[in-house]
Picture: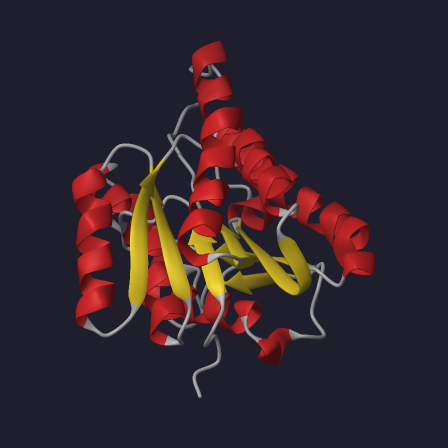
Length: 248
């Protein structure tokens, strides 16, 4: 039997990149998956099609995690479609580079609204349905450890995610709900390409500071998330697993 047979998972921001890989990996282990997207319905539909073609179960659900009504709607869709919720992966996130001189109120709120408020709103909606054995996995970043230049606001959001993970692990532990984070290093995604990171001096620097000598791929992160979602990680909560090839 697969590790997540009979489980239901919600993955936010799952229309591409790390989120898409996570949704596919969870489905491959038997979970029924809600593939959330904010704007790319086509991307989410493609992820669902890939999952169903492989024999899995998935449905695409739109929603902006930074809006309370949307966040609730994402979770409600899981309950309406599959009747339960066992795993929540808070993957939705944005990142833009800016020097201290370039930071604006809009830049700040864009990052904190999605990366922090969105995580809180979806989790708030989810905990009403998560029972004993439930698992919440927050996708953070190794940036909270290595604090790269020009990432002040983004790195601040991921520091907040790490702190929230610890708090909620203690708050939800008595209900036997586990809360952990995965902290990736640089990962080759569509977003990394569109941001000009891939092929840049920043990528070269990242590889040079990574003991395993490469940047990550989405599947590298998805496999760690699948572990945390499964009973294999039953004794782990409040942990931040740095999945960065040794970069920290």
